[in-house]
Length: 88
Image (tube, rainbow, N blue to C red; front, side, top):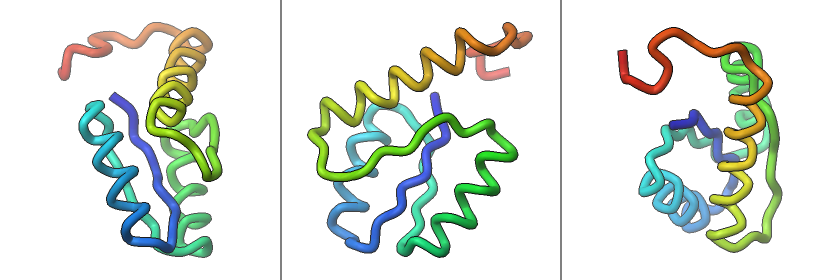
């Protein structure tokens, strides 16, 4: 599905968010502090066309809804990709 960067200094929060998003089929990168997160975000934004960020607090259903909304926006604004979604 999506490549998502989690930036949080609390390992328990990292784990919770990771479990929610991995169960939904997303690929994750985790940064344990803001400096590392910013560097990772800039790399991902350039490479993957990052579309949004989200701050705490949030509920699991709100997190998943935000990810789905971003994915929908990104897919509708980009041209169709050959073999998109087939794992090719």
